[in-house]
Length: 155
Image 1 (cartoon, rainbow, N blue to C red):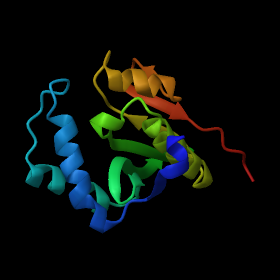
Image 2 (spheres, rainbow, N blue to C red; image 1 turned 90 degrees about the vertical axis):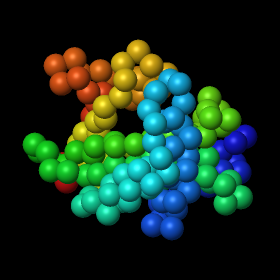
Image 3 (cartoon, rainbow, N blue to C red; image 1 turned 120 degrees about the horizontal axis):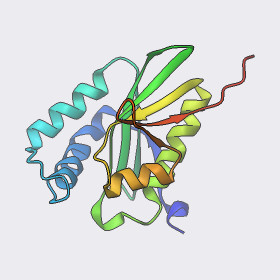
C-alpha cells in the first residue's frame, strides 16, 4: 500500500538540508547515542553528495522525506564497488517497507551500473544490522563489514 503513494527518486542538492534534519533526528536517538548538530549532519551529507561517484535515492510522499540511502561508487577488483555510507528512515515510518524499497531501488540501479559489490559498516546486533541481513547483505567477519555481491554477466 505505502509503495503506491511513495516516490523514490535521485537525491538532489536541494534535498540535502531536509535529509540533514532527518539524519540528525535518527542518529541522535538512544540506539545510536550520537550527538549530531544540524550543521554537522548537513556538512557530512554535502561532503558525500559532492564526492566522486555519488549515488543516492530519497523516498518522499507529498514533498515530505520519509527516508534516504546514499553512498559512493569506488574502484574495486574486477569492477566497481559501492560503499553505502548512510541510510535512514523517519522513525514513524520504520517497519513499513520503506527501507526495503530504498535498498531494492538502490540495488537495481547498482546492477544497471554493473557494480560488483556493495558494502557498509554498521553496529553489530542492532536493528540496522538485522535489516541489512534481511535485505541481501551478509556479515563479513574478516573485514568487519556487511556485504552484498551482485552477479554481473560479462557482455
